[in-house]
Image 1: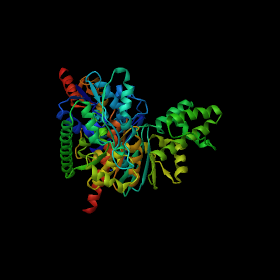
Image 2 (image 1 turned 90 degrees about the horizontal axis):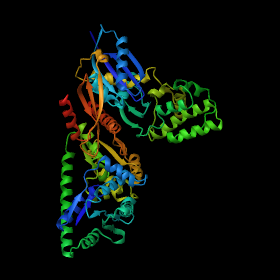
Image 3 (image 1 turned 45 degrees about the vertical axis):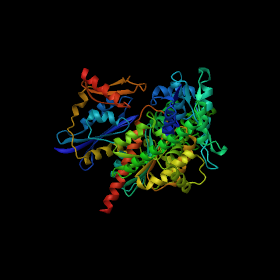
Image 4 (image 1 turned 30 degrees about the horizontal axis):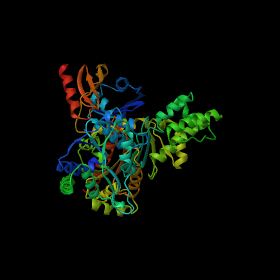
Amino acid sequence: MKKAYLGVDIGSISTKGIIIDENHHILASEYLWTEGNPMDAVKRLIHQLRNQLDNKKYKIVGVGTTGSARKLIGVILGANVVKNEITAHAIGTLSLYPDVRTIFEIGGQDSKIIIIEDGIVVDYAMNTLCAAGTGSFLSSQSRRLGLEVEDFGPLALKSKNPTNIAARCTVFAESDLVHKAQMGHKKEDIVAGLCKAVVTNYLNNVGKGKKIYSPIVFQGGVSKNIGVIKAFEEATGEKIIVDENSHLMGALGVAILSQTDQKEVDFNFDIEEIEFKTKGVECKRCANNCEIICVYKDGKLIDSWGNKCDRGAIKVRKEEKSR
Amino acid sequence: MKIGIPRAFLYYKYHVLWETFFEELGIEYIVSPQTNKKMIAEGSVYSIDEACLPHKIFLGHVDYLIDKCDYIFVPRIATLGGTKDIVCSRFQAIYDIVRNTFRDRNIKILYYSIDILNKDTEFKAFLKMGKFLGKNKAQIIKAYYIAKQAEKTNKLLDLKEQEKNLESKKLKILVVAHPYNIYDAYIGKPIIKTLKEFDCIPILACCTDTKKAIQEAKIISHTLPWTFNKELVGAIGLYKDQVDGIILVSAFPCGPDALVNEMILRRLKDKPMITLILDGQEGTAGMETRIESFIDIIRIKEEKEHEKQM
């Protein structure tokens, strides 16, 4: 049996999974929508990955999770590594592009820029808590325009004269967009304008004050949008590299991290048959009313979080006893 | 007579002075409890929506104290010395804002007003307040000096503790935040808690030798007008060589911080830095992700540098 490592990147919009061997070769990968239900998404993901992997040849000994639901999914999968997206993306990208200097990343809710020197992350920035100019903005605007997100990029390329759209704030951008549409601007021009707005917004906010050197790698869900890639190339004057697996970089990074971790885990694909449940409990011990999330595996409490103070922690323990 | 002290804004800077002063004069006081969700919600109702988060929190604490004491203690600070120095207008206005916001609820306010530029010193202000409380001059002066001594001792103890922390071998992160943000149980404490969970030692910029810090601040900017920000900027200068990274914390939408933090980001290039903006969000995931990745990057960088030296 050869050793294999599972990495799961579970974001607000999409869930990505990857299985690699000891030499970081991809053995299996899957990409699907989170649909607001990370636990269900991860079960579907594991099911797909199981079908792709040669179970007789490989055994998974390391599991890593990243993305906004990393904690929850980390508990469910019994991960040995739970890492934030920035570290995961940097490590994943560096394994494929050791010379990379700048990573642009635009996901569903987050956007970040990572600056690398000699293979070390030296600086990074992330959007403030505002989700302006991220994937969720593009997908809600495409719905407004009656388009599939997938058609967005190719349509943008058709435009010869992109419409100017105020990019500073999503709310303003949206009203500007409605206004421009009502004025009679062509759909492809508006779409191209939106792609440009995303790029301008990104470079002015997240990329503010950062020196951008090539090679530049662009990833995250939005990197699949050819319109945005083109807008980036125009704005920076550099070639933008988008790996065919650009959406998998976070998962790859965290899979590599799970390999470097000394601990090995005993991962079982049967996880898809186990029933996991979460329950939100409101702690009533003080006026904060923290909502505590309890995770149950087959009805047994395995973890909980969300309490601001220890009073909440006691409550969880009590609940476990009563079961 | 019972005084109610809101646990917000200047409380975190002056509570030893205030509490000792009242105790020495034999005046009963209560302090509102730690900030909680309900207080923020109440405070937001009473504030205009442009007000900053700590301002909303202050009004929440005042709301809590009404009906629980005879007087609510709301000091006012206009200027704190230096010919061009000012404090944020919130501290000048807070007395009037509280009086007018809670006008219909028969609020009685105990206050003192400091305006160094108009020769209203802290000493004069306390003398006036003491007289209002019905005490004689000798009693007030004695209480004030004892309170000042207590304040000084407390500061020295804090500084000693910080010195000890600075000697630690662990990763040290300088947290640059106003005391009313970082000491607040609801908005600031989670940052300290998260840093400790990642095995870091938080070093607080607001815990510093005030005089030295204000002197030091001039090196970074000689036109900076806000006294409280000056202290923080100076503290960065004093501590930066002893820490591994700097976190700038600001409460939305703080005007002085917005300008000063941007200036710090542009002028200091030799330390890893991030900005965290607090806005009373309930989830801490965003804050945790930012701190975790920040710490990770510092650690990876230091490891690689260590390898190079080997």
